[in-house]
Length: 201
Figure 1: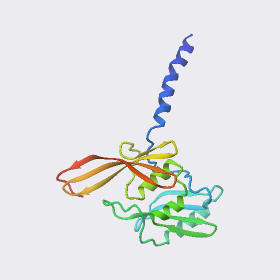
Figure 2 (figure 1 turned 45 degrees about the vertical axis):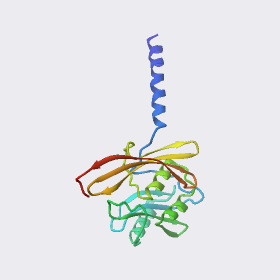
Figure 3 (figure 1 turned 90 degrees about the vertical axis):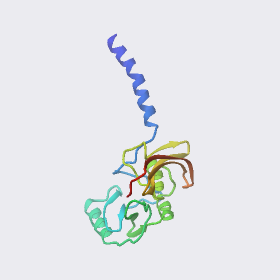
Figure 4 (figure 1 turned 60 degrees about the horizontal axis):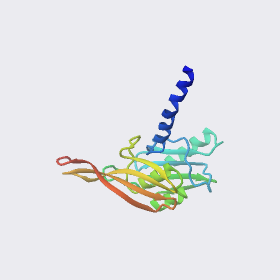
């Protein structure tokens, strides 16, 4: 009888956990896989920060590609000079861009429209966040109060933050966007989340 009672008590807890999973998901810092344009099975791609930093934000390798080939492609990408890109955050130097390899062809994707072509349909939470990020909204890693995403029917609701004033005052606003699979965006809400009257960046 004691065992039966324990099992019954666990059911509501599991249900509550499932509800929380349907709320805003955080922007993940490193991804093992990313559903990118299923029409093209890229051999390798890297989502990079430029121009001087060689930091790779997200990368993906086609299944079955060996490590030696990956290392060679990484070195090849290091040698490519990219002068401009998207995600030009006002309080940060640099920009983002994507390098991809497909059937011996290397491509640079460094505009928002180019990123949209690279992504194909916006059909995953991560793609929705990356697309909003390309418009100048930096990700706050694992902070769903400021950056997060959830699916709502055939659209995604993305929460994103940005410093809209950098000096006297510093103002950070939180935006809530709706984005559909074609990349069409509606602004649902803008809310100030931080204000420093005397600060400067």
